[in-house]
Length: 325
Image (tube, rainbow, N blue to C red; front, side, top):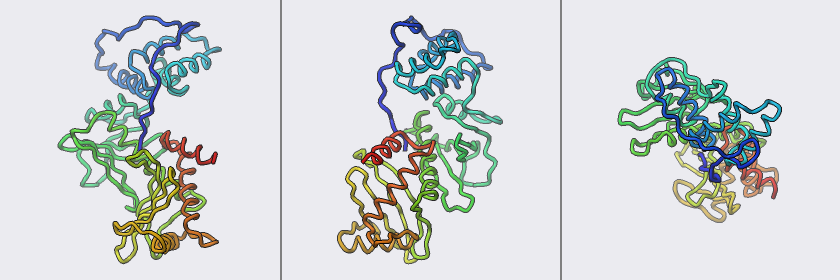
């Protein structure tokens, strides 16, 4: 999932080299050859949470910045505009040095331009796979972290994000309804899919990994926020009898719950089922305390996933908070 980060009001710092000046949107119409540059600029502004005109003004200031004080000036602008050093540096790279954070190979529909303007980075090329369910005109996407997705519009104007696992163990499909599609929602869907993959990878490299066992099969592992804004982690597992069990840990309350086929278990029944799931997934404590083991497993998952470049801000903040307890 992605997070909407509240930012302070945007503006240009007062005084010093960056004294406030009046600036406005350029009135010159763009030629067709300038379109990709314009979309890249809009994307750089979007990643910083700035308007295009503010980003243009910042780029003009940095273009005149002496190299000796470049880092200081970038940091000053970042602090004044409620964004990061990387955001402001990225504006300079795109506006002044021609950087294209979303690299597009091949031709097709206008989706790459829309995603570039929304702030997507990485590589896009026409999809050449053979999945019959993926719409014509889809794009193969590789993120800066080398994770691969397929992006497409649906026939009715929706937006789809696909992940095709080679062995179909972690394939999934996210779709946004046409009435909910915006450039921002498309980017959020992509980030959500990348986070899902990051959590899966984090489980595989965790000190206490969960894997498909002989009795219970791991179906999914998640780190999300609930409707109350509380972060939780959960595993979804099934057995040969067709029974589904969800073990969830709420980081806000510290409680671990067990749900079997839609029924919330409590007391000894919950303890027995939790033990069966963890043992079936080749993960069990030395002392037999599965309640404490669950907290350790989910804590390790959070720590590992939060360190991933595709982790949302809330996950990194929560991991730091948990580490300080």
